[in-house]
Length: 375
Image (cartoon, rainbow, N blue to C red; front, top):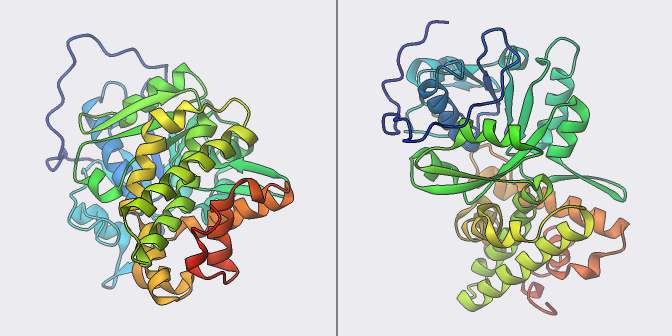
């Protein structure tokens, strides 16, 4: 496919730093260049794909310029969404009015997206992850030597076992998998507003590669050797955001919300340290993936927004999701359900009273004003 120069790149022209950038680990492709694929095209997926495509174009000696993004085909005003994105360079459904680079190509078939890709970004709603894994795990689809990163928020529970999506992808696809999470509201990231993110990596090579894919003057990447901590912080903060939204919906003030954030962060950190060996407490206190993401989500995320509506109206979360989220999925309720099931299996629900309260309010009819009692 012929690609015109991306005249609508929104970041400043690329300039080499005064000291040479570290040499990237070699690509397994004959071209010697890495090739990026993005699985997912919601607001967050599109924002990350935008950054990756801009960096791939700027570093064309190290990356293939074309970055493919998997789009679940939909009709928009009678036209295919992939065709609309590739013609207008706008994702009008999930990220309207944000120009996308011309070298970002929307592709409807998953196998075509990952063909020859050496760096695969997973950013789908977690309900679809198993379907995606099954499709691309067939022989001959994945490039030998490929690596993955997940920006999916959530966990998976099977009885007394719990898995992050990074560990799930790594186990089922047999590829090193990192995790990205931080104080990153998708629209603000796409607009180029300055922010930070954290990438948990299994090794130095992964740190170099993913930093090259995502780091920019306006999207600053810090890498840490704590894949579980980064994964869990991104999942568990959505439960706390539900509690914060309920506080807002009940008309409580800043003191109450601050207490919820402190208790929530304590439970997030305690959960990770108790159940994920090797995770680090400082990921929660020092990194964007921890305290910074929690603050952002509890003041501006979709989980907070929907929980506020829940507290005000009493409508079920599935109704609110359809009303407010324009086809996107609410992650906090799903994570709350998974975490509660795991804690019940481990007989540890009483060790995490805020998590338990949020679950009971969302799923068992506990009155919302019971949230802060007994914390």
